[in-house]
Each structure stands twice: as structure tokens, then as C-alpha cells.
Length: 203
Image (cartoon, rainbow, N blue to C red; front, side, top):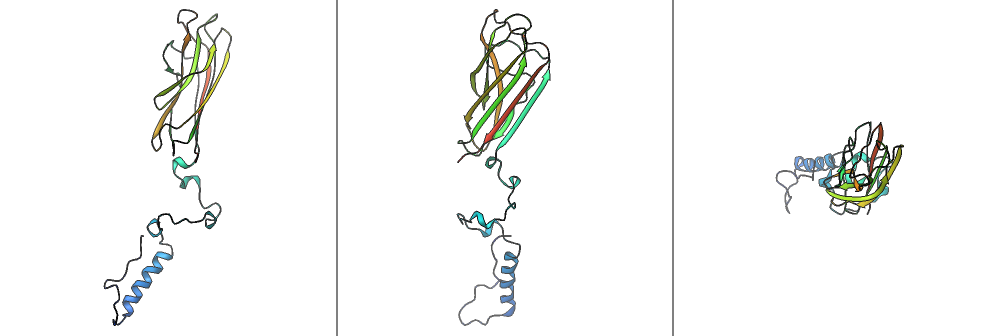
């Protein structure tokens, strides 16, 4: 409700007869604010309210700002989609990018990508895996050479948040690092892939 409002003819002056109605108005306004009407307008900036004054369980993560609590994200897919060969960083197929908000550029972003895949036949090109964070590519985090047998690839990386207070686009990527068979890369059969992101606030 805001700060306490005085009666219409306030303030009182020396020698004035104090009217009961004016006194009642001022007292009633004070009681209205104190008895359930206090809000942010009544609290001074830098009030320094001690955390022990808050009852246990009264403050939940829902009441905290997005950047003040850890944030998690998972995207996964199981399909037989082929990965197109590329010498530039390309987005992993069928994985949805994460949109995350950091409260500070000191916050840590932990990224994790796992996939199972195999080449169509024989030994194929050497592939590198990495992540894109808000338009910046972190390449060659993990390197793998596929064969005709199924393989598990697991890459993880961590960076500090490049921006705070706005949505960051984060996604896993891959590219052809070394062309063993003339730049040919082909993944077949069902491939399971999971992308995970955790943003941890720090101070």
C-alpha cells in the first residue's frame, strides 16, 4: 500500500486544537499499514534485514529472481537421423537449444552432451564436438573417430556466463575435424543423444 498518509489538514501546528477525527484518521492509517499493509514502499533501501527474521520455509525458489537460483535444462532424442558432414561447427540434429538467464557474469554454465552413434561402414572422419554459448563457439572440446561399431561420445565443458539478465542460447555442436575419407561422415541406426545445461549462480 505504500507509506502512511496523514489527514487532510496535516501537520498539526502549535496552539491548534486537535480534532478527534484528524487523530483517528492518522492512527487508523498507521494501523492499516502495520496490520498487513506493509510493502516494499515501507522498507528503506539498504535496510539490512537479518535473515534470521525470516521464518524457515517462508521464502521459496519461486519467490527468488531467476538469476538467483540454479537453472537446469535437458533435451534428448532417439532417432536415426543422419548427421551432415561439415567442416564448420554445426548444430547437433534434433536437439533443442537451451535458453538460460544468468543473474551475473560470474555465474557458471556447465554443459554436457552424450550420444551413441556409428559410421555407415569402416572408419570415417574424425569428428570434434563442442558447444555454442550465446553465439560464441567452443570447438574441439571432445574428438572422436567413428567406426562401424556403436560408440558412446561424452563431452562436457564449463564457462562463465557471457551476459546477465537476458536469455542465452546454448547448444551442442559438431564438425569434421580431420577428413579420413574425403570429408565423408554418415551416422546410421538409432542414435541416442542427450544435452544438459546447468547454470549455477555465484557471488
